[in-house]
Length: 112
Image 1 (cartoon, helix red, strand yellow):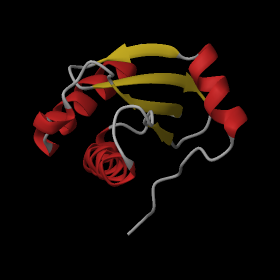
Image 2 (cartoon, one colour):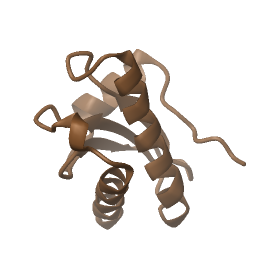
Image 3 (cartoon, helix red, strand yellow):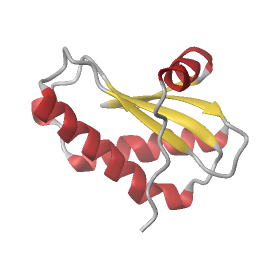
């Protein structure tokens, strides 16, 4: 099983968040910046004000798994940072909702 390539450094996140294009779903929002390679790199940033550590890690796992299931269809060459919307009630969030949002966002990125 191949591991998803991730953004690790602060400057990588800042570059995507400042120069990347914004995409939005109902629960998840994303910024994407072309990296001119054959693979995507993802980063997940969830604000500490949204939830405590256990719930934030759960949300990260949801996003990572939703991306993993859809990445085979979208080999685009982007750096993507996923964020949870601040206005979302995280008690009502489910994997299906997150997966559908990620699929919608990846389709929008692929059209650009």
